[in-house]
Amino acid sequence: MTSADCVVAGCRELLTCAGPLPKRGRALRDVGLVENGWVASSKGVIVFAGTEDEFLARISPEPGAVTLDGRGMVALPGFVDAHTHLPFAGDRAREFGLRIQGWTYQQLAERGLGIQTTVKATRAASLDDLLALCLRRLDRMLLTGTTTVEAKSGYGLNLEDEVKQLEALRDLAALHPADIVPTFMGAHDVPPEYRDRREEYVRLLVDTLIPEVSKLGLAEFFDIFCEPGVFSIEETRTLVQAAKAAGFKIKVHADEFVALGGAELAAEVGAASAEHLIAVSDEGIARLAASDTAAILLPGVSFFLMLDKRAPARRLIDAGAAVALATDFNPGSSHLSSMPFVLELGVFTLGMTVEEAINACTGNAAYALGRHNTVGSLEPGKKMDLLLCDIPDHVSLAYEAGRNPVRTVIKNGRVVVEDGRRAGPR
Ligand code: NIG
Ligand code: FE
Picture 1 (cartoon, rainbow, N blue to C red):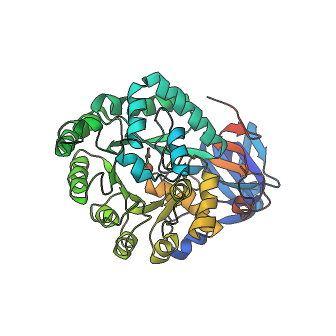
Picture 2 (picture 1 turned 180 degrees about the horizontal axis):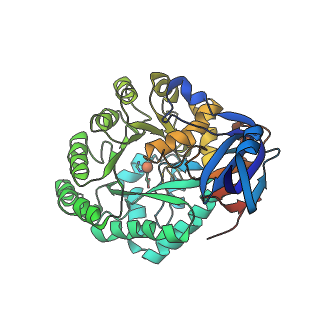
Picture 3 (picture 1 turned 90 degrees about the vertical axis):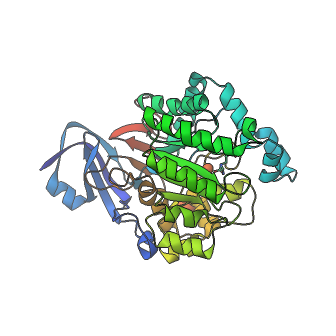
């Protein structure tokens, strides 16, 4: 018998989302559904996920083991949000007002607003300010089931302020149960002081920022906004080569508004992921499908910017790309942080099935971050990151639209959300 210190008993539906990961094509529809499913863990690591009979034959709960009643509930892996701009200061509510009156995101950017507004506020904030903001946001994310969060800098755009954002992410590890995956995004935009000499900013990134951040060990990924008016394909190639040489894994904001070829480039350079892809070309779809580069779709952006255009999720999935979903939480183009809402957007606006959207928010999202050996599915050996939702079946994750179904969140085998409220260790 295997002993366990945490047991989730008798779930009406257990979705293990078990691999192999990533899931492509038809496999993306398999959520590993077990009726009357049980899960057990020891010291934060899953030792069992399966049927009641198997549980009774193989698992022996320790005296005093935490036992949660899953009756009437749907259990699934904690959500992995593979793309957020978490550590920013300020807000853009006033600019949102302008957008409602018809201004576009690009028009705001051309007038020095948009990302630059947030750069000003973030530069003015202290490390402690950023930490406090991040903690509140992570708590909110935890309440909607996010247990692993990729988070990027990119509102400092100079060494000191990029490092400040990344230090906030580093310090969160000791203060919050969510796992943080840090990304350096000094190539989010060209800062105002370099507007008329952009090549110098590219040089600064190559010669100073990329090597310094690498030396400090503050980020695992390098990300870049490859888009007309931001960084060109050639600049992206230069910066990605420098980042790879400095030991970073690569993420690319690709083909968000214009089909520039960012997806093709991401596949070519072996990026971990290409994200957005609202305007991706047929060639880009084919290249991603034939590669290990994940396609992270961010349907919150089309929603929040009120765009008619959406990422071609169906074509990407049917071509065989490793599709994931994420929030893109940021103050300008997607001011939302709920993965259940993103899951719904995947279904309602991208034509994904509920099962595809569930895998895209869990196992495939973990794959996109290179974390699929530890999170993203409920399988022995992985972290006990589990959600209990009070819905009659998994289809209701989308069908009960606009509602947060998450009642209990277990992170590393500890209850951190109970009855829909933040609980346990801070
Ligand atoms: O992913 N596309 C670039 N960056 C963000 C937006 C950031 C912002 O507007 O502050 C995005 O959409
Ligand atoms: Fe983004």
